[in-house]
Length: 321
Image 1 (spheres, rainbow, N blue to C red):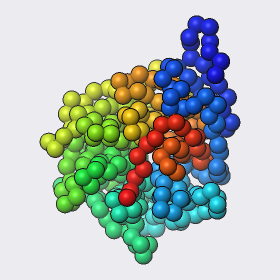
Image 2: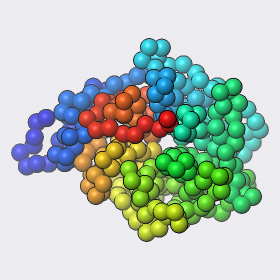
Image 3: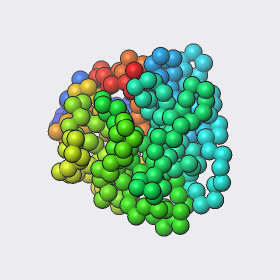
Image 4: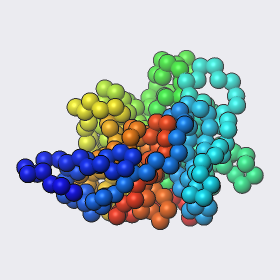
């Protein structure tokens, strides 16, 4: 990489996009000469990439087309579930899935907007509801999720699936929550005061919960101390309200060393655990979510109409068994 004379940030071309290097610590994570590849396109709004290592394939949502697609190196891209939602769409803004993950047995877990639930895809193709209400009131529209090592499922529940959002007559909760679904089925409300909780991830030791806030008026990532008693000490991890590039705080993942790879204005923002912005990976389209794939050293990016990836030097933890 060509260094600027004054040590200012440098943007370098990187195939189907570019990389902004702000801090030299990025070089140990995103190698010099790393290339962004575009793998597939023609979608409406891609989201929720999750790698299935036993089958060497990636699943991802097309939120505005009511479908889940799959991609592999050998076969390319094809529909996986189409449609995701088949019910009464009146009053709904988004019908499809959003975030996807895997449970400890490798089953696909789906954040469903149209059905306002989190479901598990069974081997026979049916879906089992894991959670669809909090204390008897229907969830808004679960957005993204991440498992803890004990089998607890952490997820966010903003109103993006509902027409009118917070003003929707279908809305039964008066807040947009962050939850922990315990293995025994108990649903615990962790956070209720974020305006638009979205992407969610845990630190490697699971002592910190990171939650993106995708409100146009409050584009920040929050961090919370996490233990068996819940989430506490909520604080702003990083604030991007001064950014003018397209995109807000959205999906994120954490590598084994605790670095955050978080979709934000203009690309995937890379943060050190101390909150320093190290740089930004900028595919040709603005990404909404990311996922680890292959051996954990590839970052897949769902970005508007396309699917992208970049090979990294760092490694993330793949979901599932």
